[in-house]
Length: 118
Image (cartoon, rainbow, N blue to C red; front, side, top):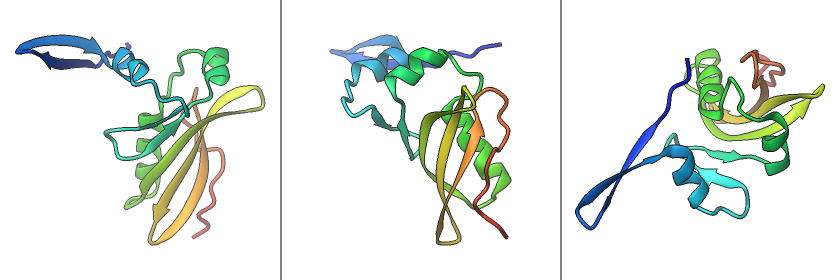
């Protein structure tokens, strides 16, 4: 089941509901980078976004996968990329003062690479 996020915007005393996607699209971030309320940046190449369409695992869910795997981690950035013809999230995170990277499959949510070797 797919969930939708509803954002309410107050315009001259009137609350206007907007979908989160529309609000983000209207932000007009020309660098394809967006700072999120989750506290990390998301980088999405428009060509990859169009190629893969909606992905079962979004950037926020990929960040949750990282923080569950590495308690205490703070996600810094999520970048949509591709591996073996499928979508992945390249995740950068800080753990115990060290910056780490790993890839999360954007279809299955599986961790594909892990640079924290402890």
